[in-house]
Image (cartoon, rainbow, N blue to C red):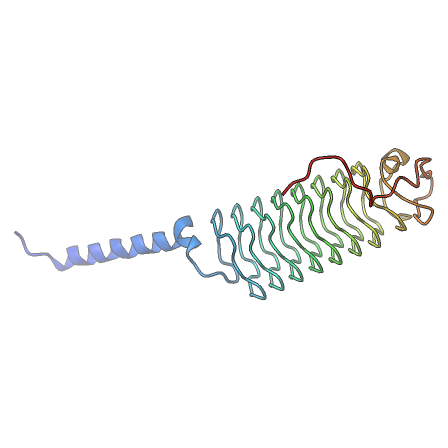
Length: 243
C-alpha cells in the first residue's frame, strides 16, 4: 500500500471540515443550535420549550413547530414566525415589535400585554387568541382569523383589520382610532361601549351582525343597526367548541 501523501491528508481534512460546516448550517444542524438573536430554526420541531425572558431578537422560526412553548417576556423584535405552528404558545408581555406572523397558525396562542407594534399578522390563523391589553397599533391583520379572540383593552389604533375574521371577538375597551375595518367579519363581535367614530370602512350591514349598545360611537354617516342591543353575549351558544 502506498504511503499517504501530505497533499492527500490535507485534502481529506479540508473535506471533513466542509462536511462539518454543512451539517452545522443545514436545517437539521440548525435545529440543534441554542436559541439566540438571529438564530435560524426554520422548519424545526421544537415544542414545549421554556424561553421566557430570553433575548431572541431577529430569530427565525419560519415554518417551525413550537407549540405549547413559553416565550413570555422574551425579546422577539423582528423575529420571523412566517407559517409557524404556535398552538397555545404564550407570548405574554413579550417584545414582538416588527415581528412577522404572516400565515402563522396558533389556536389559543396568548399575546396578553405583549408589544406587537408594527408587526405583520396578515392571514395568520389565531382563533381564540388572547390579545388582552396588547399594543397592536399599526399591526397588519388583513385576512387574519381572530374569531373568538380576547381583544379587550388592546390598542388597535391604525391597525389594518380589513377582511379580518372577528366573529364573536371581544373588543370591549379596545382603542380603534383610525383602524381599517373594511369588509371585516363582525358576527356577534362585542362592540359594547367602543368608540368607532374614526374607524374606517365600517358599514351598517357589518354592524348589524355585531353586538353594540347605546354607548357605541359610530362613524359619521353610519346608522346604528335596529338589532342593537342584541341578546346577551354571556348566554351559552349552541355550536361546536374546540379543545
